[in-house]
Structure formats: C-alpha cells, structure tokens
Image (cartoon, rainbow, N blue to C red):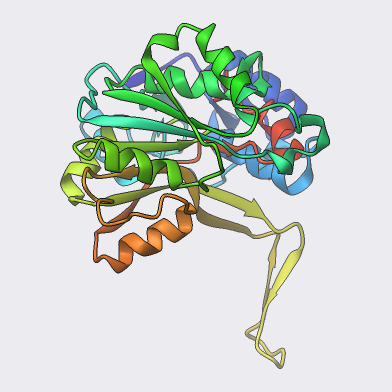
Length: 350
C-alpha cells in the first residue's frame, strides 16, 4: 500500500472541466482526483469515471467534475488495521481516509506487486489473428496490436506485463498481416521469449488455444486478446485460480455507462409511486478478452477451428467448472476509432 498525504496535486473543485481534469490527472500521477470543498470530500474521479463520461458524451465533452465524479466513494477512517479488508471487499484501487466530519486526510493506494508472482506452470497466448475490420480502411493493412497509443503499441504493453510474471512460454497466434507482427517482435527486447503460431487459415478466436493446449497439455494457459489494454492484479488472479479450483476462468471488467436522459420508473398508469431518475448510471461486468484455462481442461475438444463463445459452451457441456474473475475498471478494448481516442486520454495508460 502507498499512503499519500500531500493532496495538493490531487484536489480539485467541483467546477473543473474535463480537459482540465485530464491535465490534473496526468500531473497528479496517482490515477485519482479528489473533488473537495472546504477540505470536505465531495467525490472521487478515477479513469473509470472518465471513460464513462467519454463513452457517454464523446471525446469533446466539457462536463465538470461535479457531473463526472463518483459521489459515493468507499472511504475509511484513519485506522490502518481496517484498510486491507476494505480493499479485499471492494473493487477499488484508491481509498480516501476521512474524519468524522468527512474532511479528507490522506489517500491509500493499493499498489500491485508482481515481484512475488510466478506462473511457472503457465503459458500465455496473445490472440492476434483478427482482421481488424472494426477500425475501418485506415487500418486494413495495419495489425491492430501494432496501433500506437501514447507512443507505445498495444502489443508492447501486453508483452511488458506478461514478461514480468514468470511464465513458461509466451505465444502469439497470427494470421492477417502476420509478418509485420513478427518483424516488430524480432526487433524488440521480447524476441527471445516469444514463439509464433501462424494460422494458414483463420482458426477463430479460440482455435489457437485448442491447438496449443493439446500440444502442451501439462500447462495452464493465460489467453489475452491483442486489442485490449489492461491492468490486472496477477497475484489475485493466481490466488483465485487456486482457491476456486476452476477449469476455465473468464475475466471481466466493470464497465459503466450513463444514460444521458431522465429515466421514468413507472407503472402503466402514473400514480403517486412513479419516479424520475435523472441520467442514471448502469454498471455491467463485460467479458474483458482475458481467459485462464487449466491444464488438460481442453483435452476432450478436438475441433481447433472455433470461436471463444463456442469453446466456452463446449467446456460447460463437458461439466467443467467455469468461473469469472473481475479485473476492475482499468481496461479498454481498442475496437474502433472512438475507443482509440478515449484510450489516448486515460491516465492508467502511460
């Protein structure tokens, strides 16, 4: 845990506009802002809140902090013995510490520590064989994993994460424009740790996993889509895998959107019970494009041309145990040009 007592760079007023919020978020370097008034905490702004605002109102939004912030953040008192349990029981990275009058005192940040994590019985598979059609004609000859965001490709970001957790092997499955990806990796610092699986014909989003897991059936497989940027607590994932005794884990991310209208909750006939909810926020657990397959869990699946949703159904029909693991809100799918613009503004992507 990191205890932050100098809050001057993190504190903002409720009237600050989005472009100023983004600048303050980058300057603060803690991926959080505190909305305060007379030292009292009004709300919290994280990358998840900014992403929701950008998805709802576009990259040119001019909303203020009062609209964007989480008005009911999880907080705690100044007692360090309670903080660990708060982090364990809530999907948060930042914990504001307040007194009885809600005066902000400090912020505790839960820092991910990868030094004690090792996946020596696990191989990673980066699935990068897609055509990238959602990105339009401007990227038709450019593999999506090689798109640069803040001067670093998506693939490089993924390899940086995976290279730090003691994996047995790292594979990249390829099809469309595969030589460009191979050339990029061969010129990088990751060339000695990566093996390529080039699909002569597209095998679908899960075909390469079936092929490799049958060849290396003694290994678990961590599967990552090549068009996502994410931050994940690998220690929690490993512990969850052991405790849950899962055969297959689907990682999810919390995705929140705001309906930009007042919503009427009503019966067919309006009476005294009807209620108008102004611009409600809806939270979903979306599939994050990250999966964990236990060794031998796919041994009975022989069709190596298959989509991931089809594979999951087959695993379920074999009475295997499938569970999900929430990686939090530091995640984005670079599926189209709109998402690309949003990614350029998120502070967890540095």
